[in-house]
Structures are given as C-alpha cells and as structure tokens.
Length: 359
Image (tube, rainbow, N blue to C red; front, side, top):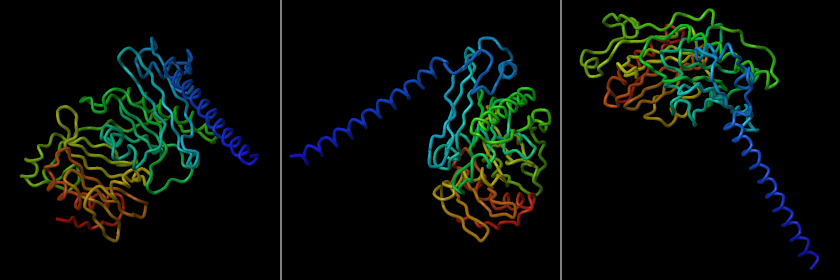
C-alpha cells in the first residue's frame, strides 16, 4: 500500500510540475505577443532593440513623424546551437520596414525560399570592407562575425540581420541615398546584436564608401553579363525573351547578373557566391534538388529551372548558379552552367571545374 501511495504521489508531483511549467511558458509567450502588439518594447527616441535613433528612422522614412515600432527581442532560439531569432517592425501609415535576426538555413528559408531571390538580387551591392553583407534601397543584410556566432556547419548559412522595405524589385534604379540609409541601419542593428550577445568589437559604418549602384549593361554580342565569350544561341535568346542585364557585385560575397522583365522580375539569373558560409544555404538544394552532377572539384544539380555547382576552390567553397523563372528553358540552363562556371572560376582564380551536365 505504501509503495502504491508513493508511486501515485510521485506521478501527481510530476504532472503538477509539467502543468506549472506549461502555464509559465504560456504566460511568457502571451507577454511577448502582447509586447509585440502594443509596442511595449519601443521608446520615443530609440527603435529596434535600441539600435536605431530618430535620425536613422528619418533617413528610412524621409520623416520622423508618426513612426511606430514593435519588436520581439533577439534570443537564442536553439540552446544546442545558439541560433538567433528576433524581429522588429517599423511602420508609418501603409509603409513598413522589417528587421529580422535569424540563421540562414538550407532547410528553412535560405535557397528554397524567397530569401536568396530577394537578398542576393542584382539590385544589391556589397557593403565592402571585407563584410559579408549587401544593400539596395529596399533590402540589406549583414552576417554576424563568426567569432561571435561560432563555427558554421557546411550545410547551414550564417546568422544574419536583414532589413526589408517595400518590394524587393520595385522596377526603378536604386536610389543611392536610400541605399546608404539601409546600409547604415543594418550595421547599427548588427552592432546592437553583437553587444547584446556579449561579443567584442563593432562593425564600421560603410555607407560613405559604397560602390556605384548597379547599372544595366549595354551588352556586346557574345558577352553575356559582361563575360567575354559567354553567349546564348540566337534561338535560345529568342526563346528566353531576355530583357536588359543588371549586374552587381564582383568584389563582395556575391556577383549576380539578372535579365529582368519590365516589372523588375528576373527572367534569367547567373550568380557566383564566393562566401563559403553563404554558399551553405544551397546545401540541401545541391543534395536533393535535381539530377546530380559530380566531378573531382565538387558537385551540383540540374533541373529544368536551375543548375548549380559547388566547387572546392583554393579560396574556399564557391557556388555557381544559373536560374530561370521559366522551366521550359531547361536547355538554356544546361547549356550555360558549364561555360559560366568556367569563366567565373577563371575570374576569381579557381581552376575551371569542367562540368559535364547529364542529358
């Protein structure tokens, strides 16, 4: 009888502890959601985790008036890996700016979602100064220093803070002043996260020495994306219905060339990712995304709308990618990848990967 009573008492205590823990978790989540909805974390003179001030908000919205702030604090969402997670939203009437701290994943978001399409677009230029980050007048991102976040697995991307305002491809030329405001803001946000995580050092403001905004190329026949000797056949060019080529990067983590439609959507994208950690967001795509390509320098995949190859270069893992919005252009994608990868590998000082695409 005593033994049975002890077991019942132990079971009830265990259930009570579980119920109390669940109730406390519910209260914490409820408080956080309430804080998001009621702007409880914002103050009159600082915004987004205390990183931005009135001058930053004025630069983003072109006015300091009637800007509201709501945020969720940056926390380690996974205690085993230390992945960061947090959000901030600035809004004025129908206009909104969203800052997000998160890890780029090969499984969730990353290459399989919209992040790469928006934040590795040809509208963005490198921040420079050895930073792994880019900015346009509507998008900006910056990776946290690895000495703050720890080692990054080959199948994951870095922890980043990104900033989004309006459309990723608004269809007009990048505004240099708005781009500078986005770059300055994303650096301030990263510096706040670095400090709050107990890491040392700060990132310098790059907004005063950003490269020229991306420009449309006046292409020469046979020099696709400004790459000498890279060309589509006349039938491929006709079938692909290309617009003008917009090119950005070359000295930063990514070089992207896009042929855009009048709406600003890319019809054809050729991209070289030289940042080894950033290339990690394509890990799952390269494993499961299509028919495999293998050789001694690396591996890749090909499918009707995308062909990609990750090479082990002297400077680290490098990704070469050709992508189209029209899956009927499979022949164009297959034809371009080997020649594009060879040309870009030569440009960055990597041995040509000699890719053979399966038929």
